Image (cartoon, rainbow, N blue to C red; front, side, top):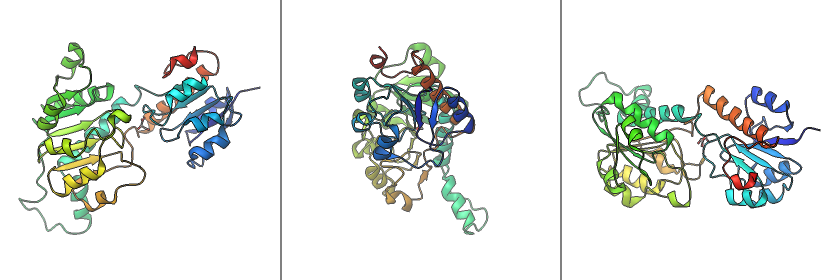
Length: 324
Ligand code: DGY
């Protein structure tokens, strides 16, 4: 008999087909968000699960699934998974690092350019029929070329964002708990600075930190106050890293020129303050959202699950103690 698994959210048919070669699959192609109660009900009797970054794998969910051996996120972020509880329950947890770096870096750049030149607001103005024709003083934006790009969180995606800045002749500074080795700094011509210097000097500040209790509200009122009034903030990492209420207040008072956000505190709900502002670009958590990358993420998660349930160490294991 094949092991039973749950695919907790909609995935490409090719991924289901691959999984069905190994498992008895309970799918959720209607993409209904299961939440804690739904996961408890559907995980009972399952040996494994493919989950999205917003499916909560909590101690309560784990307790309802005593036969569970592996939870494989199709996301690089895994703040939805209580890793300590998984290890305690002997459940392996995996994520999908690497396959989405370029696509997410591309969106960071799309947002950066978009906020620099107020593209969404300018387009709304044009569509509303308000454009009287060329005028010298309309929609004056900020130059990206030769500006200073600041990156908070210099992992793989941060470095990928930095390398793209070379073509814009930008100065690149970054802050990370640990400094990159010299060859990696040289590859993206980036200079490590302390956090205060980063906040003070960046014209464009891109956030690329994972979410954890330590990174909660890493950018709040005090940090925003250090930034240049002409600066722009870009977040393609996770909601909750930024204090959204503090950001709205800074944008409203033009203490910050603009922001571009792909992630939000409490998403999919938005702080309604964002909707009143013209100096913020908003996208619905689509950082990794190219067809090829989403396919690679789902296939990577499937590979992890196949390995985990066939006695092999999954390539992207987050809690090695659960495997041992
Ligand atoms: C990730 O991979 O973490 C993306 O945010 C999608 O959840």
